[in-house]
Image 1 (cartoon, helix red, strand yellow):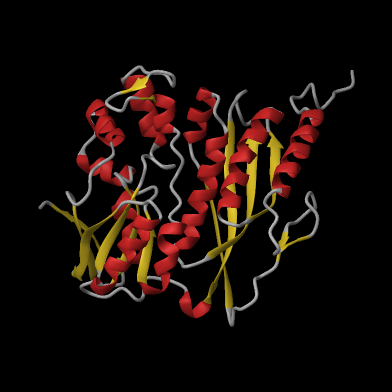
Image 2 (cartoon, rainbow, N blue to C red):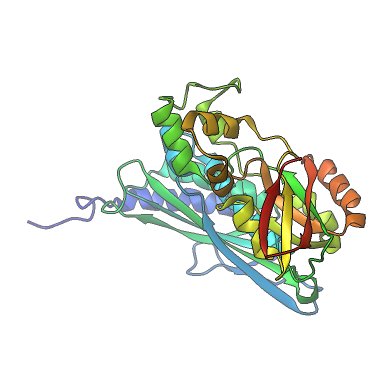
Amino acid sequence: MTERYAAAGVRLDAADEAKRRIAALARTTRTPLALGEIGAFGGMVRVPPGYERPVLVLSTDGVGTKVLVAARAGIHDTVGEDLVNHCVNDILVHGARPLAFLDYLATAELDPDTAAAIVTGVTRGCRAHDMTLAGGETAQLPDLYQPGQYDLAGTIVGVVEEKAALHGDRVRLGDVLLGYASNGLHTNGYTLARRIVFERLGLDVDQPFPDTGRTVAQVLLDVHTSYAAAVNPVLSRLHALAHITGGGIPGNLVRVLPAECEAVVEARAWPWPTVFRVLMRAGDVSLGEMRRVFNLGIGMIAVAARDDTEAAMAAAKRAGVDAWIIGEVRAGTRGVRFVER
């Protein structure tokens, strides 16, 4: 008996249809910097003119088990936008402008409608940042994934002038910590959040999420905020930026602190979004664990001289992002310490 690829779980016709639809979506993101043909073995993008010593900044990330919520809700376009915004923030902390993006979608069996919905979100995020979707990969891996499940990851390429790149070495004692608001979980902590919501509380995606007036799907699928519009106007005035992702404030802010500098964070300087209070109460999660797992309402932290905080907060307000002064840099052991006021 002759074995066939389809019988083994890989549908080439579905893959071809998905790739056709993805290519059409990718064309909508082409910028003047894009080169080459869509569907080629590699994507190409020019380095923009005007840089004396351009440095490429690259980052790869995913959206974790948030994709399981998307699959459960049958809503697939938001995780694509999540992915782009997360990666944009990761290079923004170095002062980089995004140039190109590549996505990776792996699933048990490629469904053209699902793939197109995911990439619709990716292209929406790319267009919002004037960035080319330069390529990607779709993989059918029935022996690795359960039916209906998929994984999503992306790689971003950005550019920054070498002398303007942020590394954290400009941070000084007395600098102020400016916290930019998150709109919820963003793309981290979903393994714990799903367990609390779906198992402890026994809720499903179409049911009300406590204390919000919204459904579980709406709360858990809020799109990861991009801070590009809030931060770009004042990048030259900032000493460092930290994207608050997995590890929370303690695990990410420490990454931009020089030796013998301690970040002192005022724990009551900003309000927690309701989702975190519900998760803490329903899951009986300790405060320390909450701080290590979730962003708790702060998606990005800027470190700046006190004289520059007013301009930074004004730029955030113009972009529609709430911001608060949440602490300062002091002499001490390198790390993050929370204080109550």
